[in-house]
Image 1: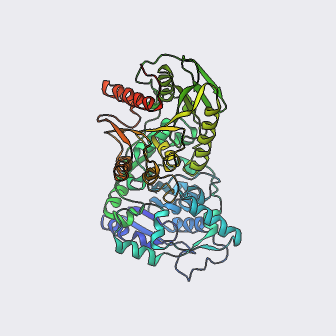
Image 2: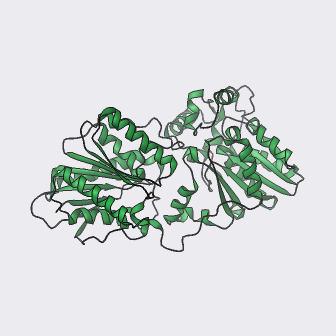
Image 3: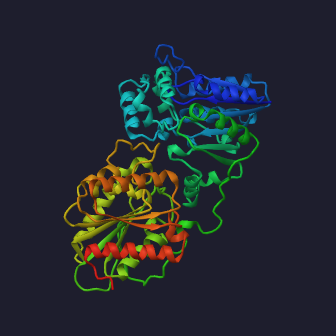
Length: 503
């Protein structure tokens, strides 16, 4: 018989697993729904000394009492931290760890590191400065979205979640997790909730970047499942989660292939482009046309997050080099930038990097500083918001290719300034060229359609170029005539708005 130990996230306890536990027992398994100390509804007091180590020791004691041979630890949100800590100390007893819509913390990581919402992080740090042993108040009904998508939760379930939630001891969120390394050898399954912005495609893209931090996700013992729901599948899709848990124990699930061949983002650009000189200054590359006098410029903005350790960096990726060289071959200065969007919390830093790069470009005597276009790709699309909300006079065009145009659930940016869907209201008659791919990931496609609708409502000057059979990143994935035609149309439209000669 398999024993499932179910550990809930912040502010909640074993009660959130009630339906999942019942389903596991009906199918012949043993289930233990864990409520950790400090979140047991005891009047909101954390109690003396309740921290992450307290919760790890509680799980260790429970594992020691479990008689079943196969023990599966299931952690949701914060719960994965005590789960991994306990598994590290009792690795010989654990047959598998299941991460429910949460990343994999490593040695030295506090739980706060995996909290996506910057406002939540800052609130925790502020409260910890006032009283390091205090508590984080339970969320109000409208605040749950900051912890993850509430998609799939009926109103009455969300109300019950709010009613039963309790304050979370701050030390459980701020104390670093300490691991010996034993846990790294255990089979692991990730349950990715697509309505919260995570998916197998996202995992594969991160592994493809080649950063060592993500290599373990391609280990043979790591599997993945997707659930089409929000961040609380034990409440929104309990039957589906039960099925996934049993399939995980059976060793099933999607395995991410290790990158043995050229990853998609390093494949050749879909067009042969005339080679032009390239100059590098700091994080900025200028691809120069064969032309006299100041020329208009197009600044290409990559997406991400791109881990700081990824090599080569985006400005050397074939797609960005190809776009910049293509612009230069048609008489404009093509600009690529390595901005520092290394994690989701770094959008403000990346925006500063882009603004600094634009100042450098406009000050170059070979550039006509009054004729500049900005071209955003993928998750870089969120960085378009500032420029759409209040376009400067020198900005002649904004382009976006397969962009993300509203923060995805679980990204912690819901109330941030990086919302092109809302910012487009300030664009006026600024030309906007949008390249839309027909085979886009659903969670991204929704944001594109919201943007198109918002642009129509406010009368924005939006041109849409469709690539019906194109994928996200089609310039190195789909080298078809239709894809090449879309790139040509988009480039000529952008350069036309800049007044560049394109013959």
